[in-house]
Length: 257
Ligand code: NDP
Image (tube, rainbow, N blue to C red):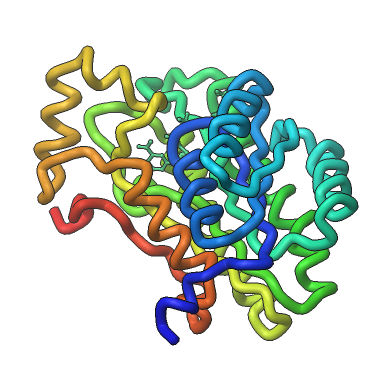
């Protein structure tokens, strides 16, 4: 009975920013649990390579190019997926960017706006478009990717734009959970620590930064994409049926200190 709750057989899931990193691991986790998964990413080359690789592994996958900041594009991709698959049961809002090492007092307008536009506005456009059709069906599970940066201020890098965007994602998650809870749509978030993805590769060239990141983590290491994907699988599935509005830390203990 309990393991069955993790199964996603017959469900359709959509993952944004799915071409690589945490998004790609999430596609594999959801597909392994039995879902048909639609990968979306703004990078078409990455999307093609990743979709073909997962298809060759035997997973039921499909893809659509999507820049989440394109509000009309979000609705168009939603409509295309519904036309092809009939429904969307799970939405994972993973697309996100960091533009770090910009002190607040000299941060350029475009550096602030770009991060807010992808991480917050884009995530909201997706919640709104997909949430609407989930509400019509009276069922759905949305998982947003927040960050421990929505709880703490990272150091030594200055990134007020990113930290503010992720704190906003957490509170947007609670707001939507409250609005949609009685109508069958759950909305939760995962808040990861530093994960070893392309986004963070620069840390290997900066021993001081690496020392801060790993030294500040009780588990004494970076996380892996699959360790976030398994939490996302839990939140997407009926195994978390009583949870909505939760922000689940997957942080190796980082916020303990
Ligand atoms: P990656 O940079 O490895 O992958 C992100 C993917 O999203 C890329 O394929 C990227 O495409 C795509 N993307 C970027 N902008 C857009 C957009 N506007 N529309 C659609 N797709 C887009 O990131 P991670 O896997 O590391 O991060 C995934 C999520 O997890 C993000 O929301 C991030 O903030 C969050 N997170 C990451 C942590 C980490 O330490 N890595 C820690 C905490 C949270 P392209 O290749 O073209 O840039």
